[in-house]
Image (tube, rainbow, N blue to C red):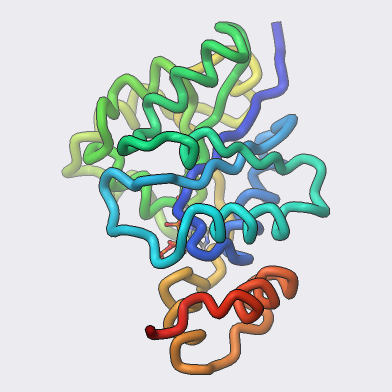
Length: 217
Ligand code: ATP
């Protein structure tokens, strides 16, 4: 049986930018996903505290994805008061969507290479596929050779066409040019009164200025 997979894209989105949106857009197409759920983290478990509140990060995310019906805002992690982990969100989604629905956890190559630092990371493969965007010309294989993920990578690597055939357990690499955009750089630019035009949607830039976000106190 073949069921169109659903993509799950978690991040701090502090703020969301065209690097995130292009990655998601390319994955929607290349992995034939029916939709992508954008899940902003609430209290990040393995990262520094976000610069702005979950409310602002969610509003910026809503504005950024408003015109793409395939992108869906999912606020489950910001509703939690305790530290949130991807494995818990995936368990919830699996319970809601059923055992047959293919789920794909989407991430950039940088995040994938640190996967073994995530809570219960090996259980992620029981709950979802992992779809990794990597720069063309850059081979993930050589970067993870010495890491704990290596044996999973070797055993689970498959093609995008397989994602709809099973609910979880595969690793798919997609060559997607990475835009040289980071939320850290955007925050720094705002703090220094430098331009952020063409790095993120205009609606998000306007929201940042309107609410005086990322300015030093
Ligand atoms: P920060 O600069 O605050 O660390 P970030 O821009 O890297 O933030 P995150 O919210 O941490 O954004 O990223 C969420 C996901 O998006 C991660 O899987 C990351 O690999 C991916 N990602 C971030 N920036 C890009 C980009 N420019 N191109 C492709 N993927 C990206």
